[in-house]
Image 1 (cartoon, rainbow, N blue to C red):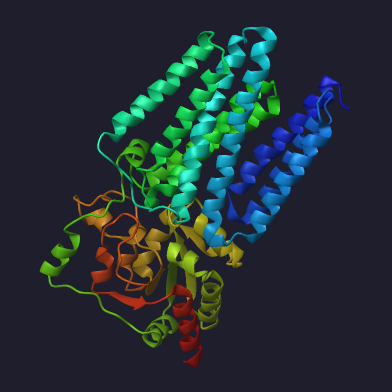
Image 2: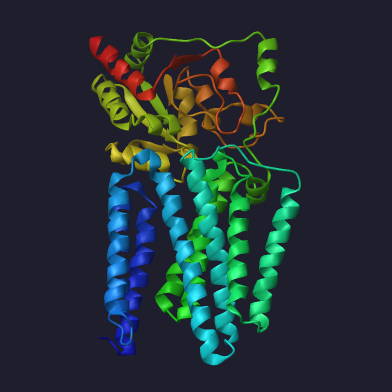
Length: 465
């Protein structure tokens, strides 16, 4: 057992350094795996140090519970498909918030009878941990359900919803203030947690699937703050610091994601963005334009004789698990002397970095992955832009239509390429609920079908040339 405070402090300091380095490495796809290993090593040091503390309690029970959790985590992480990674992130994030809320409840139960009145620092930390952790748990559960399509991805709204949510928050705040003021019956914290859980559900229900990456990032920040508050409850320095690292990085990422969509966080959370827009299709019928379908053989000719091809991956590519086939197609084109790049939009997919992770899994070279600001200047010199399953992030209405709900959102300028091939199952709108002007442009052709099947046909057609 470790009782020397200096040794404990040094071990926890090593953990904090590992977490900071992990965040640094995770900022680049090239070093992301190393970041995960460093972060995991830091967590291992933290857990080992905590278990070795003098007076830790029922050591065997803690280890048994940890082993069960580790088994669930390992099996879940190994079995989950890459398309379901956002759901797993949301679920695991929610578990962290729920754990913080349960620790707060347990500490309140332990401290109140022992002291008669809990100290102000402890009770404030308990209230914040219970409140934020419960919101994160319930909100993450709804985000998981939406991403898993257990409930509809469109915003779920009803009249008076904001007023109802305001009453819930007011009630939760009232119970929190009561606990801080000295009303220390356990029912106060239980009521606070129940109201916070209700608000977490109501908080995420009105948010559409297009905004799930932002919501996941925000809820991740909530979990970090809840963990930090729990650190104050337990007087654990490493939990305080690591929670604040998660909270700060999650908050920064949330703001950057909102900026990438040219929308404020308030608009993301309260605009019910993603409801189907009426009248769009009718306007298109009036202007007389229509889409042009193509075949794998025709697209293969375009790709084989191009100088530069830019592949634009979207969630449709992830659903079809076509990333390995896309890499094979790119390598085939490169053998013919074609330059191939990948255009990555910040909010493509269903979580931050989804497309980067997906393509990294297929061993696509990191230097071919180009972020939006870097690749947009390349499109005018691009012979073929191959859009695979992306929709709203390539919609020119974001630049040209002030009445569009996505107007002002930075997009990938694929419409500036000499030729655009869009691979989709149908002409259905994306998560934003609006049709895409790109599909009707003169230089655009549509290759309908499952992305994986279409890419396999393209590979065969290119080989036959």
